[in-house]
Length: 84
Image 1 (cartoon, helix red, strand yellow):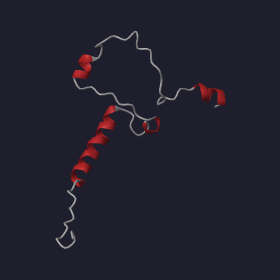
Image 2: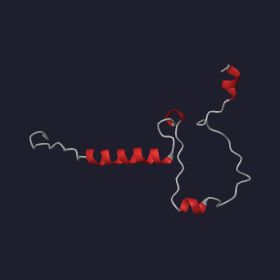
Image 3: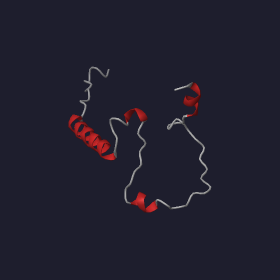
């Protein structure tokens, strides 16, 4: 790939100024209300998470692990002699 073709390729995570003047207010309101969330996956993760189901499966597994590993941290108690 030449330097020119690399320069022309858009970075999907780069900030862009979007023209929203032709947008339709409330176009996706019903879909959003139904609970649809859109998440952008970094290009380097697309081979690991090619679709929504693979992402959801990984997040469910992470949620189970996190729930099992949560333990209250013991607070250190200061004795009366240490406070003086």
